[in-house]
Picture 1 (cartoon, one colour):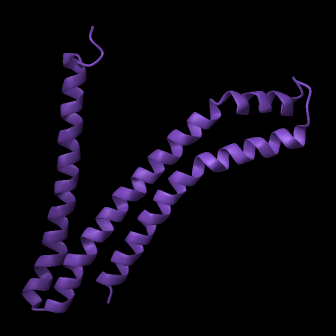
Picture 2: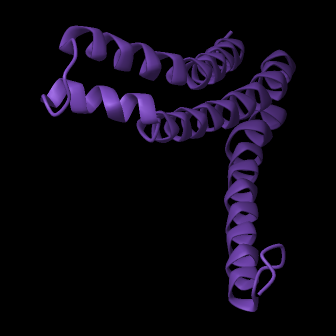
Picture 3: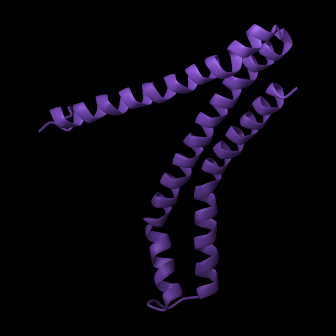
Length: 139
């Protein structure tokens, strides 16, 4: 089987996944329209309407970036845990190999922190956007 072409079952599950994602996002957009924007239009509160039209997409963007940061964080953690240096240091820490345990612990901590920084950056940026959007819609 060619690795570049998914089989029929894989294609079906991919289509189902995309369909569910579209349904999920559509329900969020419908809720934003029906429960937030439409009442603001009916009440004539133009200032609040404009703040919501700016703030809500910022919140959604921030949420997407936050989720992406979580994915980056988890993938980097698993990649770091499979690193040969980390595994060798774990054997030193457990006493299976000769070496300085404290140095191995610090080396592993440094490797993990280094792998976490990109994901934490995305998480922080997403959180900042969520906070900004929340601030805007509550002015």
